[in-house]
Image (tube, rainbow, N blue to C red; front, side):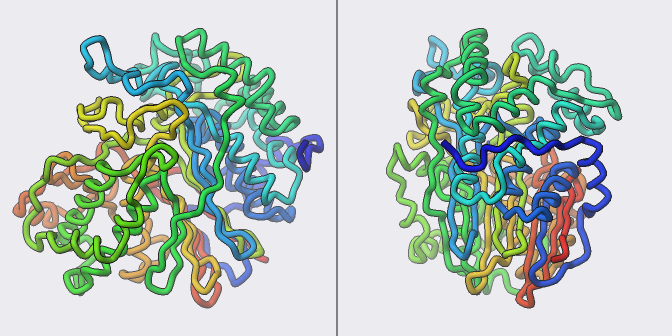
Length: 564
Ligand code: GLY
């Protein structure tokens, strides 16, 4: 059936933990041309990637191993019960893999409306009916089938060891689980699996280990058919969920043409629909360059800079809300939305002084989790991967007996086209629920290439803040000549059309009071974002070939550069 179906390589957790000594910090010293690099949101996952690359694995091998490891060590967002996107530069060519969840065949556009036609706000967020058919395992399998060089089972093995033997529970995981417990209480089995976490104590997940063993032995079929699929279907039946055995057996990831654009000296390669992320980054960067004279000389994060940025964000989010959805279901005029003529029309209405009046179109307000990792191998191949359960710990539903969390990605659909949903967002037709349709995303795994070679691998978490974050990192590096550490450390600022004229900033690195006051004078509401966003994982390769890696210091990740 598949290549590389050998038995898992025996791994012990002690051995994986010993590798932590060799992985870097948030930021590591620059490497040299030809070095490899990893930036991931969790240290054990970075250690696993380092080991795979040093064993001769390529960027996809490392990505597969990291993704399975994060499903164990970062259970709030790493997953096998969710979905995601992978942007690749392999052997000189680019590719994009869509392994987004799909609406189960029984889903319909009024799924989250009550008898009066009102949105049942929690139904798309918590519990069994919030779950889309997972895509992660099929996606990782497809990537490995096309590009993998090491045996599949050997790449799942570190995750199996960490699930079976356990790892020291970090304090952040205890606190994340405590924060969410109340929301899931009484409606899901979350407490049973994540209710006993204690910082510093071993956290073993034997059911998850067995699930991963099925996947190691049987590849994609180990998840979508057989015992694990049966457990998912049984879990759905317990909680009135929609996913059936047919949904699982029918799930297919899609190789799509990546969205790409020439931008300055770069070929920018990023996520196409059903993500809005790539579209948004291209609109952002191109509109900014069309406004070069307006931006010229502006200090980083000065009031005028932030005002102009918010003007661009307003227009991007309005387009996102109006037009974007799954391209297999709706016609999206994407090319038209990215032409220079169109973008010139859009910037013509930018108000240089005051916030433009927010029109009756609306933007997306999305919830907070998702996770990203970036990998560069010794041959210059790169993987930029963002995957998600949607919000922290997804739907809160753990597949009983199989030990993994299921997503609540159904909330990324517009619950009721034409009516505000739980977050005050009015959904549009293009993103209405339909059977087997993919919900609109903001994920933006991105690669920049210079002369056909990888120059940057970047992505972030955080719902609708994802692409505004990626944009800021690119601009910090390119226009403000920051090094990767400073580009990530700088205060991040976000606006998304609604709430009206509201600008939010990273809560742990606030804007200076004088900047806040100057923006308030122009009519903006300027407040800290409700939660820390970004968790950017960045790799850069400069024109001389110097490799740098950085992991967002606001979170728990690790970056590592591996000498050739
Ligand atoms: N669930 C977050 C996103 O896909 O944008």
